Amino acid sequence: MNSVLGMIIAFDTDSDLREITEHRTVGAVQWGGRYRIIDFMLSNMVNSGIYRVGVLMKDKYQSLIDHIGNAKDWDLSRKNGGVTMLPPYSYSKKASPLVTGEYRGKIDALAGAVDFLQKNRADYVVVADGDIVANVPLDDVIDRHIKSGADLTMVCTKKQKDSPFTTYVELNRKKEAVDIRVGDCNEGKCKHAALGIYVMSRQYLIHMLSDCVTHNCIHFEREFLTRALMDGTVAGYLFNEYAVKVEDTFDYYRSNMDMLDKDVRNEVFKRTRPILTRIKDEAPTYYGDEADVEDCLIADGCRIEGKVKNSVLFRDVVIEKGAEVNNCIIMEGGRIMTEASLRHVITDRNVIIRDGRTMMGHENYPITIAKNATV
Image 1 (cartoon, rainbow, N blue to C red):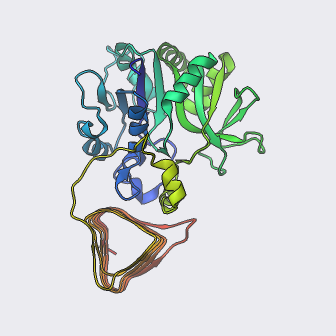
Image 2: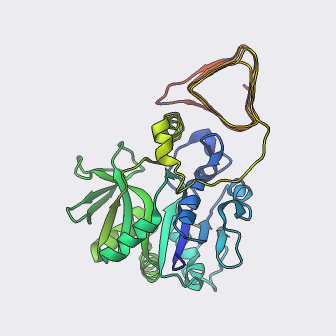
Image 3: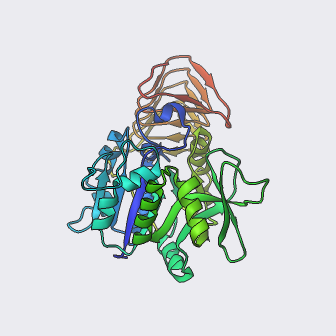
């Protein structure tokens, strides 16, 4: 699919992951024992034949750059195409006349990269958020968009929750959007939610960005989509498989815990559309004589000597003798020491829980512990 350019919005707009995103964006957050959340969108694009991808950044992007590197693990280390990292102000006002100053939202970020859009002669552009956990067949979305003749196609899922961050969509029988609302489902009339993936022609995107900047519009969902709906046709592509847009700590916790269900894992991780990530070679996990492990996802390089149940453990995690970990997410380098007890806790990288500590959250509001903390 050489005529399609991918644009990933890899900075935070509306999200609330508390301590987890103090040092990184949502897309760079570790997920599922070995992945980063942005891996899903990068893999979706590669699996659909999109080999030219721009990654738009704003702040806290060092972790993201370290993870993607030269993008060879996604088969995007290429002479022609590949990944282009687009930090803020990468294009001057002279090169990009739509640049207006500091990014206030997605429209400013896309407008700042208009020179990149103009230089890439692709026919179509996929604009996608980097905080989506889903295995989406973007090639099918693009085909549907072309056949529909719509100005813009947005990927939608069934409404799962009420949230001030969610973009709700009302579709007619032709699967065309008739109403788009942010944070308000209009008393249940909007039965679908935007997943954060949009397909349109490259020229249409450039035209709309110019129009939005001229009228001082900064919010993509409230203003860009509304103008597209008023002036043209917006089609909806219904994606009925597993999908989570990670908007808050609950979404992050729930999406990780969902992977303990084999049926959900099989729906997300497909052999025909693999989710790729940066490869790290580690020794196998060591299980001690007194280790008691039940229904967990555990990455390589761990040392388990205590009790672990219904949890997700990343690389190089240590669970010492007598420690109990239940319904938790322990990120890379975590160490849970003797007689510590954790329930419904998310620990960021390199967190140490000392001897005898007890911490208990709830599945609807798990405790989160910041990176490098010692408790």
